[in-house]
Structure formats: C-alpha cells, structure tokens
Image (cartoon, rainbow, N blue to C red):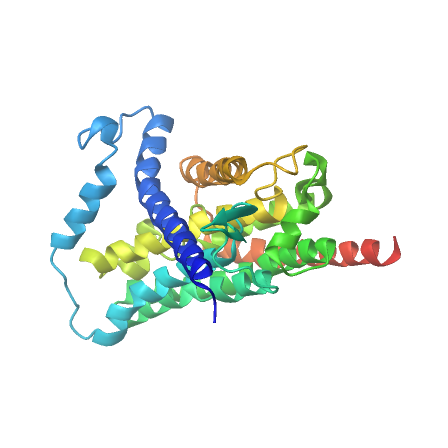
Length: 337
C-alpha cells in the first residue's frame, strides 16, 4: 500500500498538470485569435476582460447555454460519445511527460510527472493514436456525407503520418537506449549540443511536420476543411459537444509541443546547469514548448492548405522513406560506432 505522503504528492501533481493542460488549452483559443489578428493587422478579442483575457471563459459559458442538437438519423450513443473519445486520449498522454526533475511534496521525493513508467514513449504512441477514433466516430455517427468524408480523411491522414511520427520517436529511443521519457531527457543533459535536435535534425523536422498532421492543424486540416466539407467531421455538432472537439484539438497541440520539447530539446534540462532546481526547470520546459505552440498558430495563418492528394503523396512518398532511412542510419551508427 502506498503511504499517505506518496498519495498526496500524486494527487497534487495530477491536479497541477491537468489544471495546467486545460488552462493552456483554453488560453490557446484566445492566443489563436490574438496571433491571427497580429499577423493580419487586426485587433482581435478585446471586449471581455482586460485585453480580452476573459474571452475563453465567456466562450465556455456560451457553449453551455447553446442548444444541443442531434441530427435525424444519427446514432445517438456514438454521436454523444465521439467528442469524449477525441478529448480524453490527449489528456491521458500528458500523464507520462516529465515537466521537471526531482522535487519534494509532503516530504516525498518525486518527479513532476504523474506516472514515470519504463515504456512511457510506447505509452504516448499507443494513447496518441486513439484520438482519431473520436473524429471517425463523430463523422460516421452524424448521418452527414460531409461529416463522414471528414472522418474518412482523418483516418487516412492518421495512418499516413503516424508511421513517420513513430519512426522519428524510434530514432530518439535508439539514441537514448530507453523507452523512458525521463531517461531520454537525462541523455540530453549537460549542454545544448547534446540535444537530439543536433544529432537527429532530420527526425526533428519530420516529427514537427507529422505533429501538424496528427493534430489536424493547418495546412493538414483536411478532416474539417471548410471550403470543401462545410465543417467536416463536426458539421452537425453544437453546444458542449462541439467545445469538446476543440478542447481535444488544443490539448493535443499542447501535448505534441511538450513531446517535441522532450524528445528533441532536452525536456526540462537547462543547458550547462544540470542541477537546476525544479522551479527553474519547469519554466524552461514551458518556454521551449511555447515555441512550438506559437509555431502551430504562425503556420496556420501563413501557409496555404495542401490538396488531399498532395497530403498523401508527402506522407507516403517523402516523409516515410526519409524516416525509414534516418532510423536505419541511426541504428547503423549506434551499432558500429
């Protein structure tokens, strides 16, 4: 039986990490509009609270009071469950990400991760691949051809880019010799040039591109693609079910930014300060992850959307062969040198 300080430490970590995840996801809805306004020389939300900072809360209240509609002919059970299937996997994936090193809660020494398991990289891959089921079920259960086509596009996109994403993770795992995310972070400690960004530059570029496809973000947002599919898989959704889909998308963005930081930018490690306290490591981690969160927004308002045939061609004919070649070269170098 775990001791009381250990249980309290675990509960406090879970509350801190999940509260931070949901708060960041809500803040990203405001940042999305603020960054787009800045890029397009507009003002953005500025009415609700100072500088519009309370806009996410206003949006949440608005969704609660909106009418809930179930289309005629829709599968009522799966139609209601699909948004949860989309949001929950992203929330589960964050459980194994180490946000800081050693710290003490109630006299119990621990790390700032909800669960530190030996196969955490495998866990992230397994859980992350489940989010697409919410999109597929949402599209199929809506009894709408636009929604169904959006769900089918999401499944094809997931299969195409999940392979490249996994191969990039495997290259990092080979470098560290472990599936444990904490070990992968520790392997990059000491100096900025020990980061996997420098030893695995091709894997880094491919991983970042794949994260856009995995989170259905522009220019890979073919599951919702409003010029072609009205709204795609969530066309028939309203009220809090619609909000859950967006919560899942933004949570997935936060998780992918954290994973990119963990795999390629040394995680919470501070260059040339391996013994930095946790209250320095946590802001360092968040600053690194914030770069990729801004990149998600910047790319959306900069690049045009690909055609769907171009999406498939890039995934299968460019990214997958490059990821395979990179993994093979990494394995050869580790084996012979």
